[in-house]
Length: 288
Image (cartoon, rainbow, N blue to C red; front, side, top):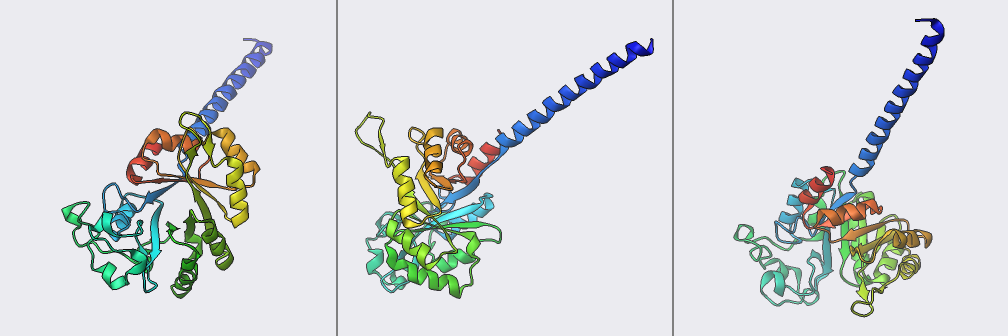
């Protein structure tokens, strides 16, 4: 074949190879982006399989490869920070004791596990200190404060006494004053304000709070971000864009137990997915 014919053929081959290589690279890049999984946070521990807010649930969360755990905390009558969601013990213990009016020793005597399954009989109410000790190095801990600002001072004292790695913590709360108090007393600990959503009228399609209201609240209490109820009918690209425009740097969503919902919020940029089923949600996202 003449040399003048070889050169154009060679150039065409090079161009073809380049196109195939570029297309392959784009596919790999796209697959990598799709496979990205946000922080998987175990809601009250692995609470689908174990009694919520117990050491059994938190340890199971680590076994299920959660990146973080989330637990609820209140003050007992004698100032102990205890891990329990409700204001009283009736739902999980079958005994009516108001947490804020009951000394820790009395709360500790109750059974917090049997309601879930016989295998968990005798599971006690843990303290914050005990949950902190159960957090492995490199893992995260979302500390939800269920009280007002009165819990902030004993929380700060405990974190100081235990020399806790503050980078491993995120404080979360629905109460704006509590978030503001945390940012004032513990400026080096990240904090998210929490919010759910309510429709103004059934079927109206109008939900509160708006993205603008969330941004204003986050700015007012000094939060580092927001934790939102994971409602797809509310949170979309435009909603997230409005949050970002309003200065909200990051958001996480709760409580997500369906793979489709988890992928939806991951694609919107959620830094974390809080779920009762950490192993299931992680596996679902990683297999896509």
